[in-house]
Length: 94
Image 1 (tube, helix red, strand yellow):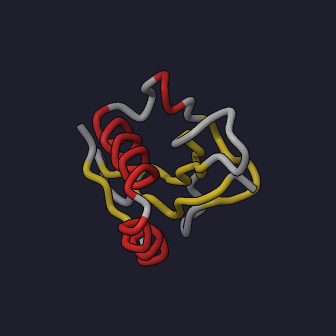
Image 2 (cartoon, rainbow, N blue to C red; image 1 turned 45 degrees about the vertical axis):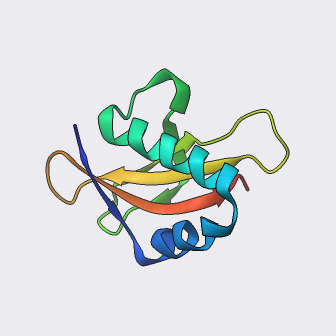
Protein backbone atom coordinates (compact mmCIF):
# COMPACT_ATOMS: atom_id res chain seq x y z
CA UNK A 1 0.00 0.00 0.00
CA UNK A 2 0.97 3.59 -0.60
CA UNK A 3 0.33 6.68 1.46
CA UNK A 4 -1.51 9.38 -0.48
CA UNK A 5 -0.68 13.05 -0.05
CA UNK A 6 -2.99 15.56 -1.72
CA UNK A 7 -1.72 18.98 -2.73
CA UNK A 8 -3.70 21.97 -1.53
CA UNK A 9 -5.33 22.29 -4.95
CA UNK A 10 -6.34 18.62 -5.08
CA UNK A 11 -7.77 18.84 -1.55
CA UNK A 12 -9.83 21.91 -2.50
CA UNK A 13 -11.37 20.01 -5.41
CA UNK A 14 -12.14 17.04 -3.16
CA UNK A 15 -13.73 19.31 -0.56
CA UNK A 16 -15.85 21.01 -3.23
CA UNK A 17 -17.22 17.63 -4.34
CA UNK A 18 -19.18 17.26 -1.11
CA UNK A 19 -22.20 18.60 -3.03
CA UNK A 20 -21.89 15.93 -5.74
CA UNK A 21 -22.36 12.58 -3.99
CA UNK A 22 -22.09 10.41 -7.12
CA UNK A 23 -18.86 11.94 -8.36
CA UNK A 24 -17.39 12.05 -4.85
CA UNK A 25 -18.03 8.31 -4.55
CA UNK A 26 -16.19 7.64 -7.83
CA UNK A 27 -13.28 9.88 -6.80
CA UNK A 28 -12.94 8.17 -3.42
CA UNK A 29 -13.04 4.74 -5.07
CA UNK A 30 -10.30 5.72 -7.54
CA UNK A 31 -8.16 7.20 -4.74
CA UNK A 32 -8.54 3.97 -2.74
CA UNK A 33 -7.49 1.94 -5.78
CA UNK A 34 -4.51 4.25 -6.32
CA UNK A 35 -3.49 3.88 -2.69
CA UNK A 36 -3.72 0.09 -2.86
CA UNK A 37 -2.19 -0.42 -6.30
CA UNK A 38 -1.30 2.39 -8.75
CA UNK A 39 -1.27 -0.24 -11.52
CA UNK A 40 -4.86 -1.30 -10.86
CA UNK A 41 -6.36 -2.07 -14.30
CA UNK A 42 -9.43 0.10 -13.69
CA UNK A 43 -7.26 3.18 -13.22
CA UNK A 44 -5.53 2.78 -16.58
CA UNK A 45 -2.55 4.69 -15.15
CA UNK A 46 -0.12 6.04 -17.73
CA UNK A 47 2.53 8.77 -17.95
CA UNK A 48 1.28 12.28 -18.69
CA UNK A 49 4.14 13.64 -20.76
CA UNK A 50 3.35 17.36 -20.64
CA UNK A 51 3.78 17.87 -16.87
CA UNK A 52 6.49 17.09 -14.35
CA UNK A 53 6.66 17.11 -10.56
CA UNK A 54 8.58 19.74 -8.56
CA UNK A 55 11.84 17.79 -8.88
CA UNK A 56 11.24 16.65 -12.44
CA UNK A 57 9.33 13.50 -11.47
CA UNK A 58 7.11 12.03 -14.17
CA UNK A 59 3.44 12.84 -13.66
CA UNK A 60 0.98 9.98 -14.11
CA UNK A 61 -2.65 10.18 -15.15
CA UNK A 62 -5.27 7.73 -13.85
CA UNK A 63 -8.93 7.37 -14.68
CA UNK A 64 -11.72 8.26 -12.30
CA UNK A 65 -14.27 8.04 -15.10
CA UNK A 66 -14.07 6.85 -18.67
CA UNK A 67 -16.19 7.04 -21.80
CA UNK A 68 -18.18 9.98 -20.52
CA UNK A 69 -18.06 13.63 -21.59
CA UNK A 70 -15.55 15.58 -19.50
CA UNK A 71 -14.35 12.41 -17.78
CA UNK A 72 -12.44 13.00 -14.57
CA UNK A 73 -8.81 12.06 -13.95
CA UNK A 74 -6.20 12.00 -11.18
CA UNK A 75 -2.73 13.43 -11.86
CA UNK A 76 -0.03 12.22 -9.47
CA UNK A 77 3.62 11.31 -8.99
CA UNK A 78 5.63 8.91 -6.85
CA UNK A 79 7.25 10.58 -3.86
CA UNK A 80 8.62 12.53 -2.13
CA UNK A 81 9.42 9.34 -0.17
CA UNK A 82 9.16 5.62 -0.87
CA UNK A 83 5.62 4.23 -0.76
CA UNK A 84 4.19 7.77 -1.05
CA UNK A 85 2.07 9.10 -3.90
CA UNK A 86 1.44 12.83 -4.23
CA UNK A 87 -1.87 13.68 -5.90
CA UNK A 88 -1.29 16.91 -7.81
CA UNK A 89 -4.74 17.45 -9.26
CA UNK A 90 -8.21 16.01 -9.73
CA UNK A 91 -10.53 17.12 -12.48
CA UNK A 92 -11.80 16.93 -16.02
CA UNK A 93 -9.62 15.49 -18.72
CA UNK A 94 -8.20 18.42 -20.69
